[in-house]
Image (cartoon, rainbow, N blue to C red; front, side):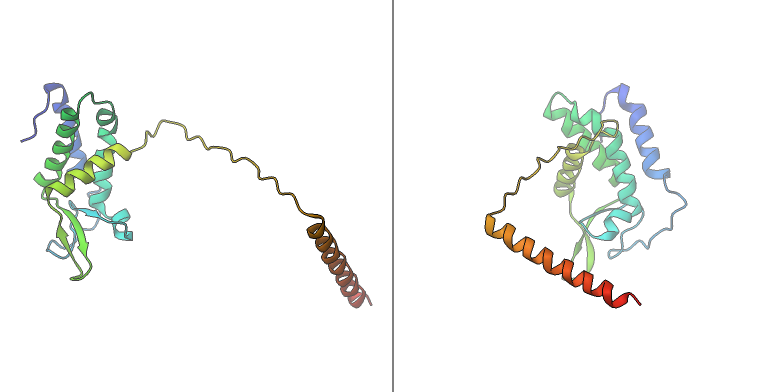
Length: 172
């Protein structure tokens, strides 16, 4: 059972409601060992991972817990947040699945891998309110040798001559 402080009870209830009730109008996938269903979290980088309904729910929960996790004072608090999310997914019948390429079916990765995935997602989650700043790239100054300049100018003159010849051919 997930141990949380009484102040966090409402937050957990809200997160569970989001996990269970969000995206209700989506199609229900088959529930078997080879096909992820709507509460499963699919691990990997394939296209299904980004579009799977269970992953969308999972990312919503990660987003809801990002700030709490990143500002947690101790590792123990971070571990409890991770375990709460894991328990929430598992209690709804969700699994953390990864495609076994040899057998071409999804397999449960187990709690240890799932906790690592959750913790990594919480660490890597970006603050949506923070402005993105891009580093400006320093312009690269290229200096050409006299030989390179001479060759460039020769090619440019050749192209100008070809262009003039083409224009002369087009004029009636």
